[in-house]
Length: 224
Image (cartoon, rainbow, N blue to C red):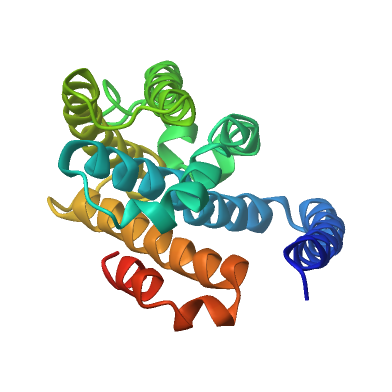
């Protein structure tokens, strides 16, 4: 099977899956809105891990270099390119705030200075601005150079903080009285692993099984 034929097959499968999932999502939203919003939030965070983890890997390579990006850069950039779509995917979460978060229904809590609708929206906007800025920069080709290394270092710091606080805002605040000092690190490392696993699957699938006979290719993949 040629690469073009494989791409057409993957595209058809993806479109059919998206159509079926869209119908099921619409039915679920009508029958049980509360369950729909909870499921949407879980799925949103899982898939958001792909561009977030890809950005981390791309910026790490910008700082350290290495031949391992020879095989991984295209799928990682493809994942990073999906970041703008998550702005739209976040809209149902905004719609379902009162179903998802008890603090949105009872604004007179002790931590209301932080968990309130206005500040929640401001923080969410800041996260998406940071993530989309660095995604756009990576898609425009920020390969290792002194300026690129500095910007990547700044980006990794901002990515670490923003992912930590986003996980607290969107996931941990479901239970507003519970907290964990390691929660953000777990969420960030999970995104990193998910993106890395997806990149490996994409590399092997797009190159074909025969590519694994190439020693250089195997070495690059093993370096990930």
